[in-house]
Image 1 (cartoon, helix red, strand yellow):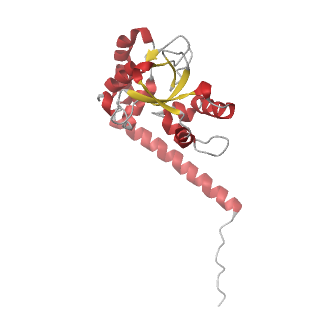
Image 2: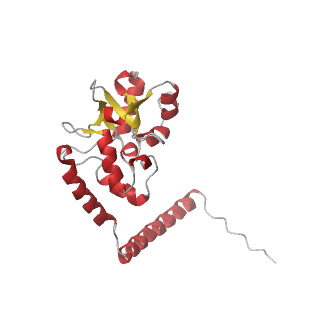
Length: 208
């Protein structure tokens, strides 16, 4: 099965491809900001497509976060550039459908409702950055495995999510010790490399 690709969609009425920068807006949970990729100049189009395909965008809660940390070939930051040139378009969430894999589509307004239910919040609060625990739930799948049976897969996703994040104190302690061991080894390696570059100078003993 093809891997889900987040933030990718199309306008329902026209079929034009878009990238969804923000799924909801503060104070307006039923509108989103999209970038119409087909109307972009080739240089900008290639840069933004490479970004959405990469891990930074796929691990971001909103594509706009990745845009704000990335640059076009001319050196301009993507999000401010798109905003200044009028390429961030506000449309209703009911007018956009997400297309994570070929042959699968789900209306953005319905997707937002599912995400809100998984996080235990209202759709109006989706613009708030999720906690680390919520991010773990989100990364399981932004879109139901089968868009035509969203109601049944939602229950399955929620169950598997809760099982993956509920660690015992013993498990957490093991993780902490493992991370501490890794950090200790990294620190020793960095000291070794520093010594190779510039050896520590020992103070010469004063001769009486």
